[in-house]
Length: 56
Length: 509
Image 1 (tube, rainbow over the protein chains, first blue to last red):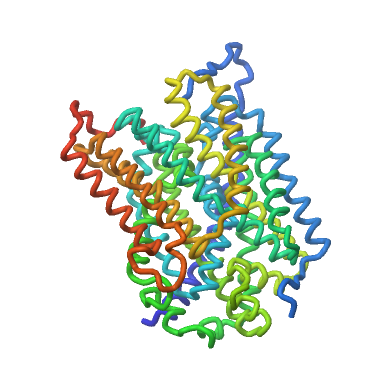
Image 2 (cartoon, rainbow over the protein chains, first blue to last red):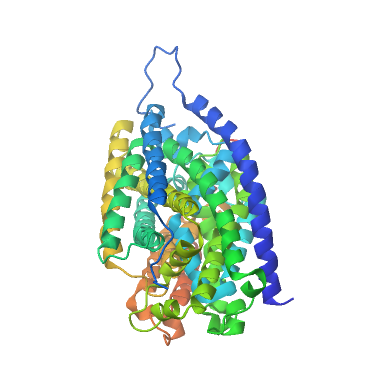
């Protein structure tokens, strides 16, 4: 197989696979953002201040 | 045809201005979510798969990525594609095996030098942190310059002061929202940038291919050597076998351990998500190389068919080859769409900058200053130091970008400066995770050995007839070899007194 044919296949594969990935990530990513912000929201009922020196 | 003639009109400026307000607004809104240092640096380790893919791509597909890959395509044609192919195989291998990233995520570290401390002690962490910050900041030294050149090329602004004006304005924008929001705003902006830029790049590729013609795209222009245009092993291509070996080592180590990318794996919700992230993102890594290279190739074919443009890129006063791609797309994309591409690229510029600024400032705070202060800093003090460091790095970028020119190409500069950190880090992390006899002395030798790569950006690497042992690619390969040998010999000759030696245990998947 010549180099030109190899690069032609790589180019076609890249454009097709990336188009598909973008579609999947847009659909899945919106839900993920909502979940992430829920995880990070400070608890509403807590009366004890967070330990600010604790790293994790 | 005027070299800087462009389809960029008032409507495009409006699109860019409106678009770039969003990141700043997001930065202000998400401030309420930043409560502790882990929220700022790794978004509270809350990233799920799809948002992690978007943010990893957003980081690794910056404007500078587009510029250096387009420059490679412009200068070397299809032979440049080998870099993308090698990188994709390496990222896929990491994703399928979980090599390095899975175990690092299990350990719940926030930075790579934090691992050094867990495995080799505090001194190694401080040394590693300093070298990582040095290599990383030098590596992003030309981001601002490349971004400004893109904006000049696409807007057709060729005033002599254009570079300084664009660099200053772009820097101020990125500093404002990185300092405000930390990783949470970075993640949200990365997602927005991923969507706009990915769609823009795919549509832009259709325009570029239509302009040149599918069949003509695979014919080497008359001004270049046919074999060199396609075959990366051909010495005339500007690459050759040593370069290919360098790319294998570099892209594999960078895939696993480049701080801004690894930070995404460390921010993943579970070690399993970190692993999946790499497998899925291998497609993004291919696209971030191949699509800009395609634009660069189309740009060169277009230039070679237009005599006055070809003349502008030849001779002693030739335009920098980084201008090739933006000048091309400024002429072929219609007004309106050009504004969206410019806005997407500007967002890409911001998202890469914010991630890198955050990465290096985190390393300086967490791995150099905090250990030196015996970890007596509060979260509030750490956040303040992070923010001050971000601003200081920003000013360094402005000065370095105005003063320094990449000796060979933008990508080669980035590869070599990346090696300063990667040669030592890759050796130390791999040995630390997988070799029981790896010792502290071996780790220090490997880290210091990485500094040899700085020779690769010296003026002696410039020009056509440089002896092979002074080329940047040879210096890059040898730095990895010396770091590797240093680790083995140092560990065998100077083993640790207490056999600590297995990698520390972390959380389960």
